[in-house]
Image (cartoon, rainbow, N blue to C red; front, side):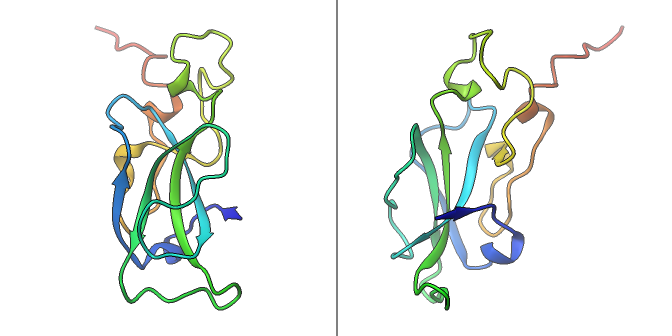
Length: 129
């Protein structure tokens, strides 16, 4: 199960672990997943690929409703723009999915944010000289 993370959900995060470089990624999708461990690579059961995840502090409590831990995962689906940067048919040529954020804005304990880069709007209005 996954949900959009809120700042309060992220208070127990200790670190963000990237499985690949995010330097060339305009955005990644983020989700708050319920898993049975505080750290280590979580099980990934979506299409596409897992790009990163968070580890929790050793004292992070389990969720009272499920007995599981809430951890963020960062991923890309096959049709996402970072996977198809030159495809004119890409559904996110401009804009990004609701749960997508710029990976440069992701830190432990802070939800990521959309930026002109994640929205692919930086190139739309060139500077006038």
